[in-house]
Image (cartoon, rainbow, N blue to C red; front, side, top):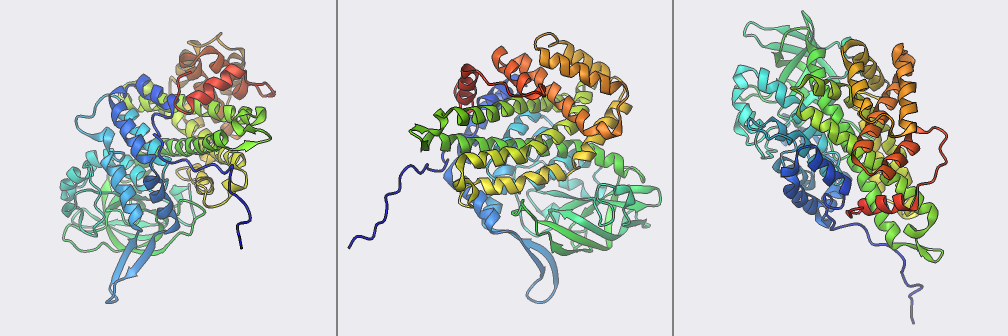
Length: 540
């Protein structure tokens, strides 16, 4: 007897063994344009390795086998360690080998190293997002530690700048590579860190004793954390190592790991400080100022991470649409589907252009105007891109239909990951308030915008009208308009980049699509063809 009920056909194969860099024409061009052309060959190699079925499987395994809190060892001694699946460690090895945690901070860092590092971050984000959390925090903390690392820990600078990943439970001076975490938020405060209650009292040897808690103690397996606590002089920032200089464990106890919607490969914990030892970074009362130094870097990474995951979602959707047949044609040939995918590709073209212009501004932050550009557009980009990621991945799911909704697809994991970047390091309201703060307190920011946008004035009527509308709001910005102002600044900054660097039909299509509130305009067939070709690595 024959028990076969049907033949399986018209089922697209999953997207594996692609080059994540070379298949993204907008990314390739942005890297060259913004000063990291010297890294293109290595980026192509990284993109090839990360696009393999083996790398993608590591991402899956790290998330279906989340970390485990080990409070005690077999003898009952307090351990406060975290056990990870081997896939996590392999992913972390790759990130550190590619210097995503410290490329821009080398003593002889090349011009454009911030741009190159941003591209590497975007590529890794397409494989697994949880491992980016320790990488981001280490990257943001390193320049502060290069300036203010306590004397007893000066031998940490070499492993901080190495390309090694070392997961051993050991003092930092005995390791080949180090990770730095952060402990900022508490139960009663969240973003309002000024309400923190953790206390820090100075000791005779210059160190401090910390008593209190952290509601989110990120990456608890880190070799040290930067912790906010109330000292005599006000809210201050402290360097709290896992092991003290004498080799003893610091008095930091892990209470539990968070059970999160997404980001499940990454350990986020709650912690208690029981007279934990810390060292002051900077001066007492400068805690918020120290946070802001790191906050711009972590917020930029939030935008990069969301963008990378959006790019992966589009790649998966495009690959499916080129294979799946429906109503007598491949999906990619159906007019409605072609329109949806083209608009998604257009959105990513703009985000890529803006993000890598922003990376160049960070790279050249010694220039006052570039630093100001980065200060304004970082929270604006973080707000707009991280918000856009959730509906974007949902749209990609619709392309695949039921297959995309099932866990065998990458898309459910990408969808669960999306909210964290919008929440972490400041939610939407905080980003809107930060943009307003820059506009109010940074002299010359209005002149910078006028000069920047004047270069493209007259090229597109939608851009010009939107700029006039923003100028009206900027004359007397209202706090309740913070989100809308942040969004418009991001859109106009993106539109200016598109008008400068893409073909006139594509730039005008972007401005019409993103800046015309009436909507309803169709993309021309030529623009659709160009976008879909570029989104798969071709040259329009």
